[in-house]
Each structure stands twice: as structure tokens, then as C-alpha cells.
Image (cartoon, rainbow, N blue to C red):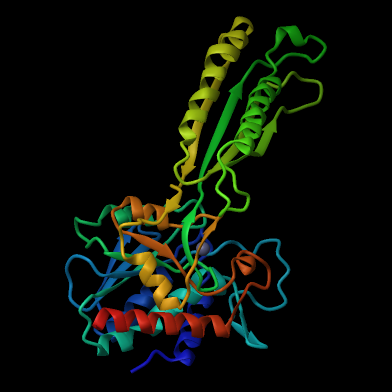
Length: 386
Ligand SMILES: [Zn+2]
């Protein structure tokens, strides 16, 4: 028994029809998947949020217990707000060998292939079980998968191999950068702008910190390189800023956000400490000489570990063999792979579709990509049965 392409396409149409934009509940989709799996005699486990509004799903096909192959993907999608679509983003539309819809590429196409495989997997005598590990809130900082990984070795088995199906056009990705995001909030003192010496200009001090970040950026660019990445250095940039309330008032507040996307092995916290030292030991005392209430708060808002595949695990050679390839790739976008790896489950990223089509209006996945993915999963099932 083989997983059929029509089943995968039909499954994708069902998945795309659930609007699982990250800020919305994914429970209707999870319920649909649970019902589908139950129909094939597969039990699912939820790892829900505290309010139950969202949930991960973990299900095992084959013998329960430690190890196993996890097919991992996120159920959430990025918003369509402000994008011009030629078709309804939540109605899968086929045209010229392409399937259009929000999430078709990133990454419900992979989830659809994994689900379409279930009847075929059930019919096999698997020596290594398959797990489905579906998460939420990946697009907002890979936060939803963390509680599920937290259950590994407790209420859930630790997978031996994790295939993260983010769109790589079925090439094998064994490394990605790790983004860290910060927010700095500066509090100064308001004054009439004709009397700046009576106030503390929060924007000006934010500027001083941003200048230091610019120096760090230049150092990073001149520093360690890994030519497998584009660009081959650790990047740093300021991404958000807001401050002040009127053009004739010394601004009492300013906040800004920045991110670092570090190469594997890079320690972003050394730069975190350097910026804090400058803020708290140099600039804050100066601000407080005029306004004792002045403050600078710096917080990490999100951190996803960089990913470099476990070289002692069989996963990368196996993925290359199954895909009929001989070279791996490194990418600059991030995935849940680093989190799985840190959770003790060796991971690799290989999935259908091109990242260039992810997050865009008229997002699509080529039918041929779904076919490639199904063939890959079939060979993986052969391996698990042998
Ligand atoms: Zn994705």
C-alpha cells in the first residue's frame, strides 16, 4: 500500500481551509487531525497551552516506546493581512501544477504528506515506529513546540530521528542560524524642548546604544565566517523603534528592538552583556544625574537556538541516502530543529516546497514537490520496516 498523491492533495485542501494564523486557535485543525488518526486506529496526545486555545499534537504509529522517527511540522501560518492574493488564501486552488493557499508551502504541504502516509504506515510491519509531532506558534518565535519537547523522556518518548519538514525543496539542511531578539526600553524625563537641560532625552540615549550595536554589527561582519551560510557571518540589526510624543517635548520614552542571527556556536550573550554594561554603567548614571527616575531595561524577547546537526547521529547520512543526494545545505532562516536537537532528539530539515514561496501572497507548493516528499517518506518507511 502506498500513500497516494490525491490523498495528500485532498488532505492539504482540508488543512489549508483552517485559518491557523498564529494569533488564532489551531484547535479546529487539531481536532480534525485527531479524528482522522482515530479513524485509522491511531491515538493522539495533545500538549495544550494553559488556556487550551492552542495545542501541539503527538501521535505514534507502530510500537510505542523510546526512539522512533518523528515527522515534525508547525500547524500555524503567517497572516495574509495586507497581501494581495489572486485566490482565496484559505481555499486550496490548483493551477498549472501548483497548489495555491496560505500555508501550502510553509508548511501544511508536509503535514498533508505525513498524514497521507498514515494508512500505508499502519499496513506495514514497522520495526521503528513513526511519530507525528505537530506544533503551533512556530511563526511567532518557535514557542509552541517547546512544551512538547519538554515532555520528551517524561510523558512522551524521545524520538531517535526528527525530520522537520520546513520547505527546503527536499534538499537536506543540516544547519541554520539562531535568532535572538531583544527589546530595550528607555525612560528619561519630559521637558519643554526649549529647555532640554531640564529633561533627559530618551531617544538620544537610545541612539547611543544603537550606535554601539552598529559597532558590534561591523565587528561581526568582519569576524567569524562560515561560507555555507548566506550571508556567511552573524548578522545584527535594529528592527523596531518608537519614541517621543510631540516635536516640542523632550522625549521621556523610547523603545527599540534588535536581533542577532548567529552562526552555530556563536554566543550572543557576550554582546548582550557588553550592551548592558554600557547602558547601566555609563549612560544610566548620566541620565540619573538629571532624573533619578530614569531607567534602561533590556530584555531578551525570543531566542531560538542555532542548529547544527548531530554528527554522531545516523540522521544526516540517512536523509541524504533517502533523498538520493550527496550534499547538505545551511540556511539563514530558523526552524524548530535546534530545539529538538537541544531536547536530545537528533534532527534534520527536509521538506517540500521552496522557502521563496513561503510567507508571500499567492503562496504555493508545486504538486511535484508533494510527490517528491511522498517518495522520500515511502523510502523512510522502507528503512523503518527493514
Ligand atoms: Zn515554517
